[in-house]
Image (cartoon, rainbow, N blue to C red):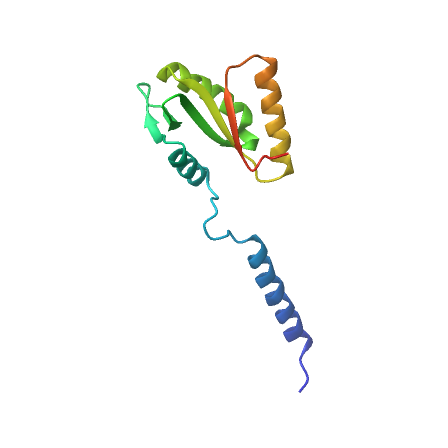
Length: 132
């Protein structure tokens, strides 16, 4: 029995597609959205998620001591402003949890840390996946 060239190509595409799905599909139990990271982290740290403030902004996680903004690494600069605003509105210390998913994210994490130190910002920084 001879397999046609078209059938060989079709099988090759199917095999590649299955391999791609196995490598890149979300793993069971792993967080993928900002909200998933936020919910899991905030629960572990005894905080409340999505707390609405007087000006109708929402703190991602409010703990006894910190008003915390969660963001993926590419939005590191926005996280600074949001955490400072939430701190002013709540009277708690500002905090940022930066989420890194790749090497570019680690670079953004380093920039965030350097800027917080350079400008003497009193922002507590945590990270998820940004280990150097």
